[in-house]
Amino acid sequence: MTDRASKAARFQELHRRPEPLLLPNPWDVGTARLLAALGFEALGTTSLGVANSHGRRRASRREILDNCRAIDQATPLPVNADLENGFADDPDEAAEMIAEAAAHGAAGASIEDATGDRRRPIYDFDLAVERVRAAAEAARALPVPLLLTARAENLLHGVDDLDDTIRRLQAFQDAGADVLYAPGLRTLEQMRTVVSSVDRPVNVVMGFADPSITLDQLGEIGVRRVSIGGALSRLALRAFVDGAREMREGRFGFVADIAPMSDLLPAFEE
Image (cartoon, rainbow, N blue to C red; front, top):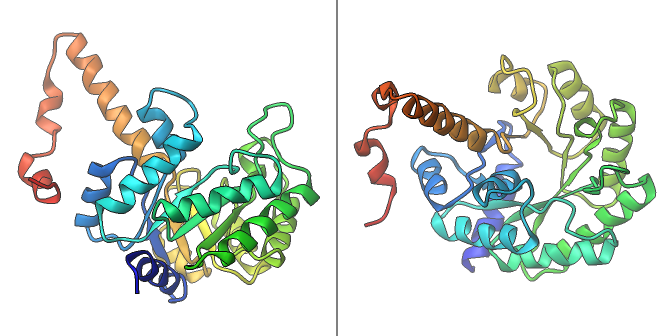
C-alpha cells in the first residue's frame, strides 16, 4: 500500500467511527507539525490561511496545491484539501483540480458552490449539482479514491435559507459526495437539522458557530467531523498585530505571553 493509499484509507476510517474527527487547519509546515505533535489525527488546509500568508485575500490555484503538498509532506497525517470552487465554473474543468489535489498528496478534498463573484455568489442549483457530480466521478476514477466533501455556501454569502442549503446538500449526496458541509451554521439546532436531513457524514466548522458548543454536544447530534477553517490563522494574526501595536507604542509586555521555545522545538526538524 502506497503512502497516499494508507493515508486515504485512514482518512475514510476516521469518518466511520462514532466520535467526531477533529480536523484543525494549519497554513504552513510549522503549524502542521505543531498540530501533529499535539496529537491530532488528520489535517485540513485553509485557503484563507494560505492567502493571508501571501498577503492577499484569496490564494491562487497553484498556491493552494503547493500548500497541500507541503502540509502533506510535513507529517504522516492524512490531509483534506480546501479547493474552494475548483477555480473554474465548468464542472469538468473544476473537477480537474480533484486529480491535482490527489497528486499533491491529498487524502480528501472539498469543492464548494460559491462562485467567487460578488454579483452572483452562489452557483445555480443545477450547475452546483453537476459540479459535485463531476468532482465525485473524478475522485472515484483515481487509482486511490479521494474522499470528496461538497460544501453548500449559502450562509456565508447572504443567502439565509437553511431549507435551500439542505436541498443542496441532499442533492450533493445523491451526486456522489462522501461528506457534506454547510459553513455558517451557528446553533446546535441548525446543526441537528442538517445532520438529520442527510445520510452522509457532516462537517461542522466552528469558526462561525456559537463558541459555547462542545465537541461532546456535536457528537451527540451526529456530527462526524469538526473543523475550524481559517480561525487558527486569524487567531495567530491577531496575536501578532496586538504584539506589534504594543511594540509600536514602546511597550513589550507581550513577551510574557510568548510560547517557550521548549514547547515548540520538539515539533520541528533539526
